[in-house]
Length: 325
Image 1 (cartoon, rainbow, N blue to C red):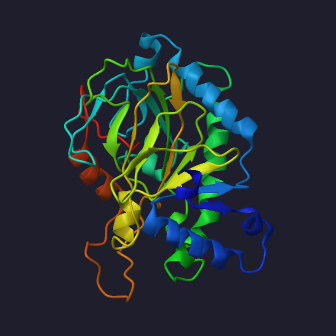
Image 2: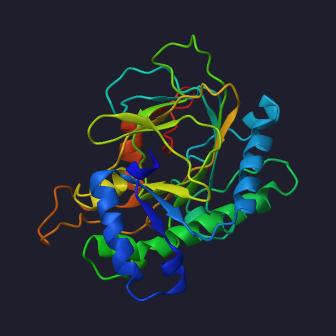
Image 3: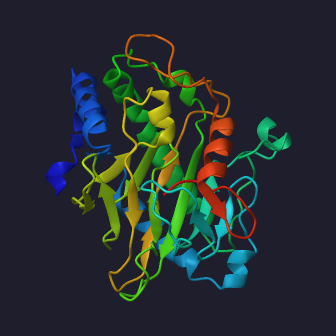
């Protein structure tokens, strides 16, 4: 199955090797026109940092429910979402699904108290809600910085995959939006209903989702031919996919591939997907192959997220729209 998903070796890119951007850009184009996912090796994020982030996800969810609910998710999509607190209202394959059997906590960029967007109370630009766990905040901010650095380093490949100058996306990703979701998927019983998922089939909202490989299985992908298969986990690799924002921005040339989680491993499962997008105010007009007008109107991040999430995700208690997978 690992052969189904392209593997990009970022070693030459990180070393500044001649031709690396062109070669990897072509490989990325193949990944997004044929599969919608790709792996990266030699990505520069240490396994120790990834292990620490998984451990922090487990530590957060091991708290009492009262402690977690004190950080309840808010209008900025930041904070704790309780178990079965969201239903994928219109999922990727048209199935009617029960509320998702997971709980999660969401963190975004840490903004200074006097940041203009925070002062103006702009949607999705609130203050993070941190648990009273020693070292937790520092570890999560380190993980976010590492994922953001990796995502930024990949932007030239996306540009060349679209036959654009390598620095095309640079202006759009000055202080990019991002969300780290730390999810807990409890064991699902073999007798659970067929339409109960850890998370129902869906596509992400993001430009780029970076997913640290999970040693506990559960993630499945649906290829363009309709086949579902369990995502492999090559040692030392990260799994990356695009969501609806990438698909819209590329005038639907790049895929947003459905995926789902079912945890029948017999163990507790944790996941730490990192969703990265353009900056809050960037105007994203569809990038067409011939430079003509795209199929969709230009859009900015808050308008896209509000519209898409209102259609696709529903928070059972507060009607808060949620980020992705």
